[in-house]
Structures are given as structure tokens and as C-alpha cells.
Length: 481
Image 1 (cartoon, rainbow, N blue to C red):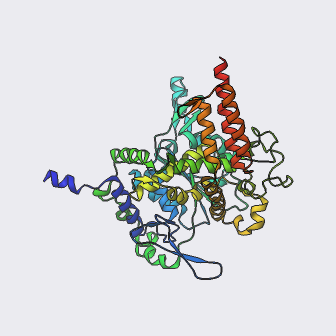
Image 2 (cartoon, one colour):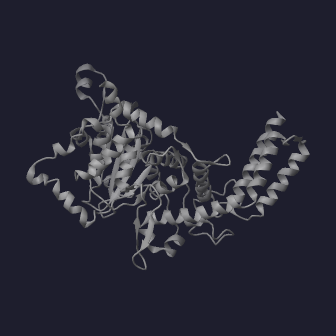
Image 3 (tube, rainbow, N blue to C red):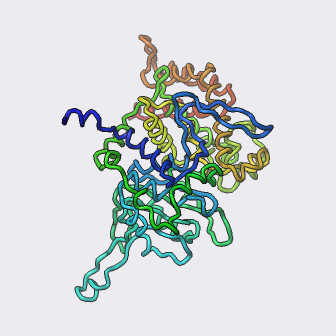
């Protein structure tokens, strides 16, 4: 009997998949606006502008809002921004996902929830002083807030909070730590959701550094009309009371801490697909980072020619440069290191939930728009070519990734990568195969490779050439010691 029970026990992945379906089937969060597919869908044009997607057999379709709430809930200190119009389930989706995937009771989540408003103070977010202890015992005692202590943190309507308080909350969002009255406070591992309505007269501008702390962001759309029937079927809590039964987690689907730890290890251990010793996912993520980092407007010195240094003259107000058709011309800013790390993390998590043993380039491309759209600022050129990208930032990123992938394919199929590889090997080993080189021979190999690669006349060629020069200079510097 015990052996049979063990055989029938669901894996962590199966529990997560079934919980995802259960949330929708119970009408707790219903949205069949499927916008993420585990396999590339068939696109069917239904008008000169619009198309619909048809799912291939034996694959899954997801609503991005619930999918990323699911994946983020499973990661330690996962952070997610949820944007959209009022009253379409942004906060509800976060509350429900947080409850089902972490097991934290919904009342505890609601007690800890912060509602953004101009009067919100640091003490509401992090901690307060115990005045009784100060008066009667003469000692300082810090009491963490319920928000800080809850494994599921929800900041509702976060853009109604002043920017100075958001700045003080950055460390909490980024690391799970906060400082109050000189005391370091740690939040338990969990998830942080922030919701934001679209801008109106009562909102503050969310700063780029604050937005960068969110690993992923979604644009929640209102449910299509055919979903309303299922929403009504769950009952009207204003007429029929609360939803206790619908919020009960079946015992066989309950995720305990061992399950969640095992899930994180499974996600972390997924390897990427390799082609000729080159990891598809990590190399493409690095190429995206490199493609958006470069800026002709910043400097004529290649070391300083980055978007981070284009603080006065930018892609918007500079004269047209040499590389006019390169993808970097479409963004004002570059990507942070934490974003590149999140790329691989969420690509693995997406592959995991789909039951794949390896993470592939298609997995990364599926999640990328939701990791980047809230961080990348389009240039005026991007908005002039596609005015609707002012609204549809996800569409903007999808188009941008397409441009970057074209250059990535061009690089992979061209003839400069072999030259790059040979030069690096000569620098690192001072030989090729069994043939050894002296100092002058290595220097000539490097010089010739730099000229040949530079003749490709592409920003990615500049990056490859810079890498060779950097490795060479590093080697010479250490040999001089």
C-alpha cells in the first residue's frame, strides 16, 4: 500500500501544472487571452492588421499574467510588476497565485498588503519602534511590519507612492533586506508583487532604477467576453459571501517547503542546449546585452561607447551615426546585469513547467518580452516607425528581439567567428594545435584578426575585437610580472 501511494504521488511540476489549471477552472483568475505558447503557434491572418494563433498538438498555451505569477512565486525573492487598467484582476491574480503556490493563507496575505498612497511612510513598509519597550525598559526594539514578514508581499497601486519612498524600498525589492534605525532586517524568502494602474493625475512616475528591480512585468488585459461566464459561475461574493471553498488547496496538490526547494533545484539544474560547445541561451542573452549596450553617441572611445555613458547626448538628440540600421538605435538605455541573469533563470523556469529536460533558445524568446519591456526605453525613431509601441511595449520588444536575432544569425553564419576563436586560442595558449608561437607571432595573429573582424563593420564585430584586445592586454600585463 505504501509503495502504491508513493507511485501515485505527484511530482512538484505536476502539482504546479494542476494548480495553474485549478485557479482558472474555479474562476478565481480567468483569462484565456493566451499570449505565451510552449511551441511556436501557427499564425492565421484574419484581417490586414490582426492575426490569431493556433496551438500545435501536444503543447500548452498560457496567459502571461498567471504564468509569470506562477513562476515568480516559485523563486526565492522573485519580483513581478503587474500593470493594466483598474478593475481587471491585477491584484486578485497576485493574491491567488501567492496563496496557491506558497501556501500562505489568503487572510495573512491581505493583512500584509500595502496600498499605495501619497501618505505612505517608511514605517509602513519596513518596521516601527516599540514605544512600550522604549518607555518602560529604556531600550530600542524594532518591530518589522507584517508586509516585511509575509512571504507573499503585495504592493497595490505602487505608482501612487512617492518616489522617495520607492527609492528606500529598492533594497527590499532587490535583496529581501531592509534597514530601519540602523538595524538590518531580513525578509523571509518569497515573492513580491507590485501592481500599477496606467498613469493618471494621481500617480507618480516609476523611476528606471526602481523598475529594473523587477525581474518580470506583465500587461494585464481585460478578460474576453467568453470568460465572463466562468467568472460568474464562481459566485458573487458580495451576494453569496466569501470564497473559502474555492480557495482551499487540495491536499494532493499542496506544495510544502520541500516541494518548493526541490522545484528550485530542478529549475537551476536544467542545462541549456549546446551547438558546437556554445550554449544557445546564455550566448543569445549575452548578444542581446551587447547589442543594446553600444552607443555611438556616448564616445569615440570604444571603452566608453555605452548607453550608460550617454547621459547628455543620446540616441534621440545625436546626429545620425555610422551604424544607422543597428538595433542599438532603438533604445535609450542598456540592460543591467540582473536582467541578463533573469533571462536565463526564467527561460529555465519556462522550460521546467513545460516538462523539458533542456532549455532552448525558443524558451528564452518566449519569456524575453516580459523581462525587458518595462526596462527598455524606446527611442523617438522606434516610436516614429511604430507609434503604437508607445502603448504596446511588449510588441516593441518582440520587434527589437527580431532585429537582434537577424544579426545573431548573420554572425553565426559568417566567417568572423573562426577568426575570433583562433585569435583567442593563440592569446591564451600561445599555440594552435601543436604549433607554438612567440610573442611577436601572437601579436601579429591578434593584429591581423582585429583588422579582419573590424572589416565586418558591425557593432558586434567591435565587441569581438574588443574582447580579443582585452584578453591580449591581460595576458601581457601578467607576463610582465
